[in-house]
Length: 270
Image (cartoon, rainbow, N blue to C red; front, side, top):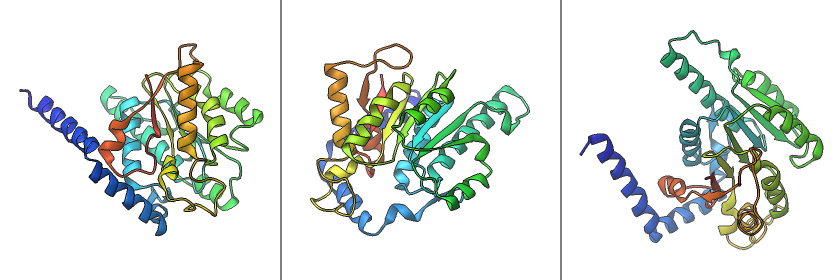
């Protein structure tokens, strides 16, 4: 057998076995739960900006971006800007690799690839840090509610002409808000790309674990994902390309990384 194919099958088998090992996945869920008590996800930066993500999820992001090669990434929820910088740096890396393959001189600021980030409150110190970052030229900031008509008009404007689009939803984590975001943003996802809904793991936490937040068990991103997929199955939706919008939960990704804040949150348009 070709060694490349042999290794691919080996990895696929590893991932399958992880998905079948309920004890191992159970340990992973316990680890995620306990890591929250220690503020673990707050400890990391990407190119100097706090990213507030579990490192395994960050690794999944780079695999998805490299595999899907989006030209536009839309993100709701900005916080310190680390996620925007992560996405922008991956787009910049694709620009670099394309220039190498094509034998062209790279002008970093000439690329059309970009990230659009939305937040209801972009705090002054975070905006200043993002503005000062070398990846800033690939980032467009929108301040306002991610589900407001005014913001959606700007999203529509920025999405014009882009065919490969990826979406990350990470703002208000209540069921109602995430469900509305899915209705508004999922249609932008191009075929073969992803809508990633972060922090779906809230549903798997003990009752009262997030008592200081307006979301919790039964009212969170995962319940919104489940409801939205029911709507897709029963009512149908179309993407901005006019084609049927089908989003499958990609369990391969979460089984591969085993530790994730977003079980059932990696939605692939098929």
